[in-house]
Length: 355
Image: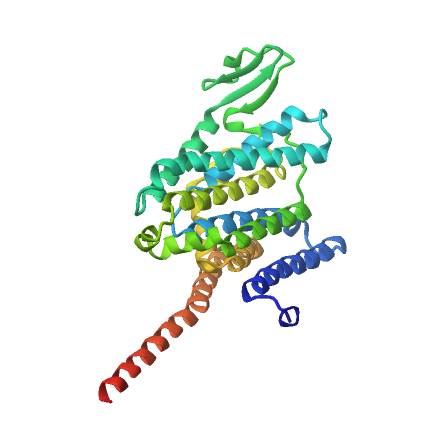
């Protein structure tokens, strides 16, 4: 279909991805407004979308950069809490749309900044250092926020690691973070449509980055670091650029998350190690390096356990079977292609030797 527009293969792939997302959004919106969707499924639409956003960001790190990160839930946590605190402090002072836009910018910038700070010591090294550091970072961030009591009154900001009473605030003071109880009262500014728009924005940023000169430099570093260094590519700088963009996209998903939930808590259920692993599963099963595959895998694999909840104990068995089937379907053609290529190469060598 795209040949008549004289588009390159890369551009056609990008537009196909955007089209799939838009068509899926339109179908779900029609189901939503015609009463064809249960209230339970309606509540899953926004979480499905922000997990797809995180999967897109993580695939940039894992598939394009070639570095394993196990702490993207931590970047999501930073984006969620920083934007929620900003929204709480500015409710009624800034118009709703502008407030959410500014909260979005703050969450993305702080997540990107934290990604930069983490990347400084580890991206100069090879191996699994990034995975270890990001794993520790995610757990540290989660536990620190879980222990903080934060409030504000006319005297300024009050912070404590002991209890809410230790803040010693004025009676009319505002509690922002109530320890393990988290943040309550965040404006409900995000919805399914906004989440889809931000997903498309993430896709535009990542796919254009991949097709750019910088993206090609990053992929050359992934494929052969020594060769990239030998032709003068600044390896650390390009790795830092890709990792910071990946962290910023995770923070973007955190903003959508925090503005779609009544009570925001820094728990393992939302920002723990298992969440990072779950997102990594979306990336692997969707195809490492396949941005479109990450979106599709996140949507299917997030919704599937919830849709099978009525089957009680059999639902996780079915979910496991689907995971195995997706892995076989996704990777079998690549394995067959490599095997065919090897056999053809072997035949050519034998033929040349006989000649």
